[in-house]
Length: 324
Image (cartoon, rainbow, N blue to C red):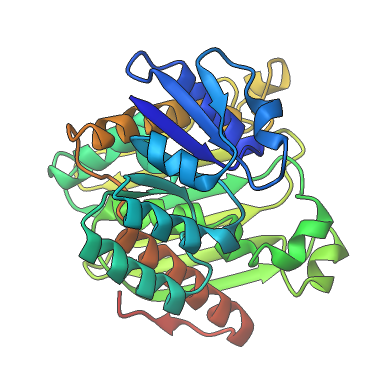
């Protein structure tokens, strides 16, 4: 099997290395629109740069898209036209209208399109969802999700980031409804600037809290921020009728006393390294026709709509009813 990677920045290079380590992948092909960049990245065994996107599509059994967001719709459409399964980093389009149009094309084409929400591929998260959807935990009462970056992003990135709900909390806005497996009927969000005034200048906030109310009555509280002095922290806790479960707690979690004496997670690539590796395994299984798509394009519309509802709620100070 040959898998192509379009875009060889930090994420694309990481995906290429994980693909290269899989026995079912015979060759990893690299393409980047910046001349010479793919050639510089093609250092792993069985990895080869190709000069044009058309070459990538012709020679690959599946393509992973890790280019800038504004290029995602064009590249996904190129994969659809070629009949090539694709895994596209989130989001597949930057705005709801554009995403809705693209999703309709995806579903009409029947070519597998996976969206790169890596938490859906995290073994602990997958098992937690299984326990919830099977009824093993009973009715879900409450969910708490915590996600804090170790260090703020480059301030030059902020004006194009889409804001804290689209950029940071979008992962929990995808993962938590996926876990609970119910529609969100109401959203409330609040945020503030506490880390650096650069966020205010970008019309954004650097700390935020979101309250989601689900159709069955359960609530979820999502907390996120741009700076944790101890390291990157992401955890999810579920309180249900039969059990209470927490994932994301280990000796490297900044919350734990041990993390002061050990190596706390410096960022999301380390915290979710197993998820990223499993994501590539699942993608190759989907390409081979041996697995169902666990992160379909239409699901990603839920998190984007929720992110937009969060932004409206933060700005108005009022809850926003959701039709999801």
